[in-house]
Length: 574
Image (cartoon, helix red, strand yellow):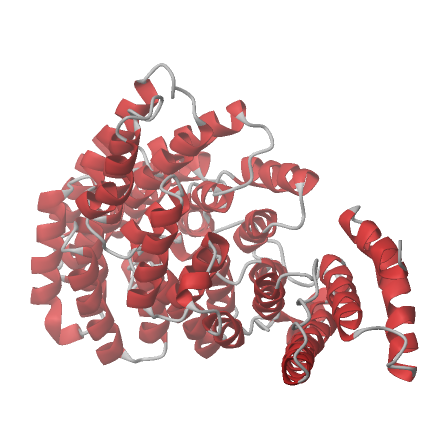
């Protein structure tokens, strides 16, 4: 065996630190005396050395070494051609090409992987584009499809996904990629189900494709029904992937309660589950279940800190406890691990907005919207930033775009109405939009809150109180009890107002505005005065459209921060 054979054996055995050291010495040896090793052996050493660097995540150095290897491969090809020509001129047989060399396709794939880890997606595409279409493996096509999709080249992405399915008809991620790019479910099924009709154990596949086709087409009721049908099948019952997909579909349909329930079921079945639990953390944060949220973050960190989800979950806990600087750091760490993590972008945008860094927040919400154009909270975050920046026209344009992209659903109409509400001369339009929203979904809390505010502006307090009371008969929500308390205080019904504030605080102990209202009434009763309650609250009382309830979370300041929290230059996306 030659020394190259021994290095190859170590490489095959995964002894990358040993390969790195040995190949480094041999490459220097060859550079100082090029005649001691053949061009083919030198090429192998460069590839093995680059693979070792790649395995140890030194992507910048690995990228440079892979480049050297490709240059050496070109030189090797020229040497073979020169010898072949010389041999043919002398009437001798051409020498065979060197055998057992690392695949050039694999070298290009790993070079592209280095670029992706360095967030140089355009360079990664440029490398893989040099591979002729007929020579592309399913792995290369799948990678190219993802890169094309990230850079907005949807047609090219569709072509690559279809090529993957032509070679591997059970590549389910490729199926989801096509459905997410608005390819019809029937067309996708024709690429898979028709090829596998005679194969046993795949009777469920057509229904699985149909469920995701409904979900990506925003037909959430039918998607939920189809997912539930799959879950009820004996052989697919309690499948974790199906449960998390069902949870995400419930979330997109606006049903937080069922989404949380399905995520909980999935965790019971798979205690090491991480995927999609950033969304579960977001839902717990929305429901202000902070103790559960903190426990979830700690548990996920115990499973892995190399995924974005644990950082996002703990980031939402910090955000809800008003440690906004920490939340920004944790979100930035999640983005570093997964640049396409929408939930991390939303978290960072929300935390930056809470810190008053509105222009930076806009950038993050825009990126989230680009990656997930079907998620309403991406539009809501942007709209809130625009309104805070007094860019009402931009907010109106964005709300109108949301209606076109997501349809005129009750939550979208409510967001649109909120924008018109900031136009003091346009309350009629806000009234019309909010009435349409309530006609579709009478129990939508945001719509009820906004309608009550519109009625307050029109000095129709009795109607507003009746609306809030009707909503409370269906669902007891702390913010509605607090708003009802505000109305009761305004008409000097002190005792019932105190009762409503008490209920609001029992449901959400962090509701600082309910606590302030109660303390104000106690002061007035103690002082015997009648400081006009309505006079203290003449400002716009509308809650934020994202439902954050004025950020009435636990009073924990950013002064108790870790050393890294002071270095905001670390928080960028780079």
